[in-house]
Image 1 (cartoon, rainbow, N blue to C red):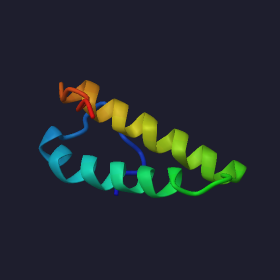
Image 2 (image 1 turned 60 degrees about the vertical axis):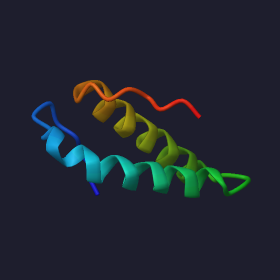
Image 3 (image 1 turned 90 degrees about the horizontal axis):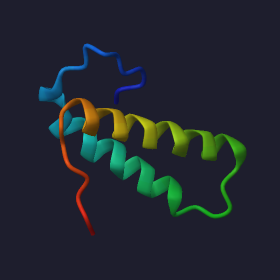
Length: 63
């Protein structure tokens, strides 16, 4: 998994990274209540997902 995304992120990795990040995010969000550490991890995952989608011009899928 990608922990530190940089401006030189290779978008060819997005097809593998995004599903993994989204899966981790969904797993964490299913746990209630979230500890402070878990909430920080949720925030980090959301930021990484947003970064990849923006950098690689990947639209957010509507569900």
